[in-house]
Image 1 (cartoon, each protein chain N blue to C red):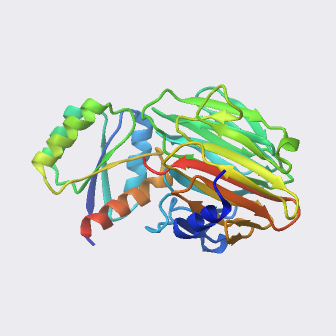
Image 2 (cartoon, rainbow over the protein chains, first blue to last red; image 1 turned 90 degrees about the vertical axis):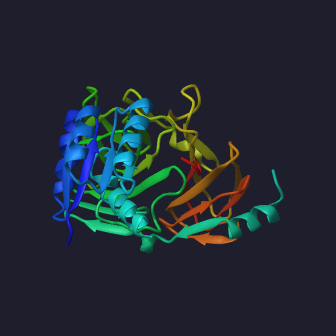
Image 3 (tube, helix red, strand yellow; image 1 turned 120 degrees about the vertical axis):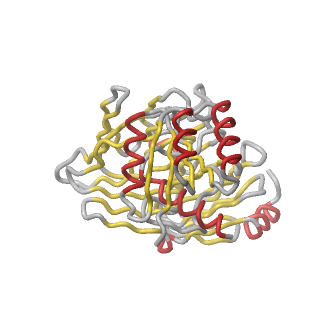
Length: 103
Length: 250
């Protein structure tokens, strides 16, 4: 099965580490986490991501800027708000986004 | 109040019924959990949320066991113990015990860590954990816990949560109101929604009820939208129900 590359962006280091660990616990998902916008843009250019998760602490201006950048680089990119900060909603958020993208 | 016929019609046309035995189920030995909506490894695209109500977990934790330190962000998290005592510790410096009759609310906002354990070595703890999407992201994390007067819900709906710090119950960052009622057999009452555009999700804690013309049993859930009010009738003694009025749009 194809590996899904997922970029998580969030300002809280411990939550970032937790979310990336949880993503990578799924053998078909490969998670990378970054805390700042410039790093996010740089890695987005270098790696082929299918999905971006926007985590906590990202202000509206940053979010708009990031989404515009990602969509320009890859019009097919899926961008999802991640809520809850842990394992509770993560799997559903990713699966639902991927399912909706297929339809 | 609107006439009863209109309320019944509304319940038939704009409602979703989640029978107790159709919920997701996880048994980890120390933890048994029933999920009304998709959660953790239970993923059902048809069961994602009811408006901003995203998680309704019905948890039982074994003696002395619990959830170790784990993070949360951007979510309003409400815990309602039904039996036993739950010990809570968090990164905001709170160490508390919540018991039957208490309600706890946390705004996870920019991020918190917490743990939850069964305080007792000789008794299960049973509690509901409810997650509500917040109406603003990245708020400063906060914690609130109160003890409710259990006598104040006999044959009436006791408000336990609202959006207003000055109002009865705990408060959260969302235009949501929760009530609990414990009714005698055949007791009827109505609930009028407080905000246009909100829906109501009823969850039966004990016994049997009828809402509109829909029969509900223990741990059934019923969501209703596009209505101003609902009529609730208890069909058994000491029947207990939790009503959650929530915005239907995030």
